[in-house]
Length: 298
Image 1 (cartoon, rainbow, N blue to C red):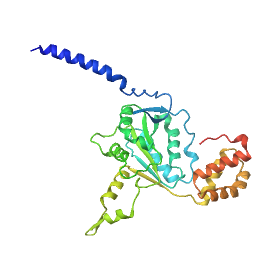
Image 2 (cartoon, one colour):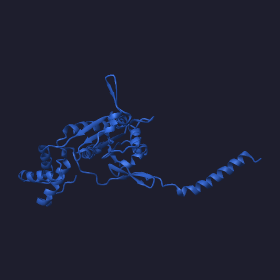
Image 3 (cartoon, rainbow, N blue to C red):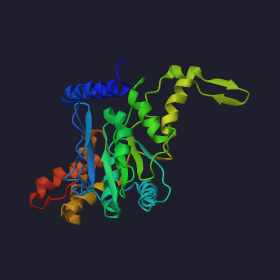
C-alpha cells in the first residue's frame, strides 16, 4: 500500500494538470470598471460574462427641464436626496403613459446628484438575471448606485421576474445600503393581466381574496416602496412643455406663440400630447426656423 502522502501528491499533480487543460475553456474574467471614467454605466454581456460599460456621453437632462410633473418630481427627488445622504430610501416604480417623463426623471436625477456620489447602472430586462452579480460588484463602494431598468414588463414564466424579486426583497441576505432599483413601466403590476384571473378570486366573509396568479403579479410591484404614476398631458401642459424646449433652443416668445398651432397639429398627427412628442416637435421646429441655435441635447 502506498504512502498517504504520496497518494495526496499524486492527486494534486493530476488535479493541476486537469485545471491547466480546463482554464483555456473558461470565459474571461470581467474587466474591472474604471469608476472614475463616468457617472453612468451599462451592463453588457460578452458570451456568458457580464461587465460594466461606461457611458461617456450621458443625457444632459435637468430637473428644471421637466414640467407639469411637479408632484412626481418632488417625491422622487426627496427619495434620491435621502439616498445620497445615506438615509433610508425606497426602491421606486414609475408607471403610466408613455413619453411622460419617467425615464427622463432618472437622467435628470443623475445630473443633479452626481457630484454627491450618485451613479446609475442601466440594465436591460433580459439581463436582470445578473442583478446579484451587479450588486456584489458595487457593494461596499463609497458611491451610491441606482440600478435603472427602463420599460420593464414581464411575460408569464419569465425567469428574470424572480431574479428581480429576490434582489428587491426576497433573499436571506439584505441588499447593500448603497444600491436602489428605479424601474419604469407602462404596467402597474409589470405583468399582463387576464380576465380569467379574476375568476380565481374568492370571498371569505366580507373579505375578497385574490387568486394566486394575481397575487404573484402584485408581489413584485409591492416590493417597490415608492410608486409614482404618470398621466397624459392636457393641451395646456403640452404647450407649456413645447414652450420650454423652444425657449431652450433660443426661440423668442413671439416665435413660441407662432409655433403653437404647428405644435397642436404635430400632436394630432402623432396621436399623443406627451413630453416626448413636445420635445420632438421643438427639435423639428427649431431646426427648421432657427438651425443655428438648436444646440440643446436631451
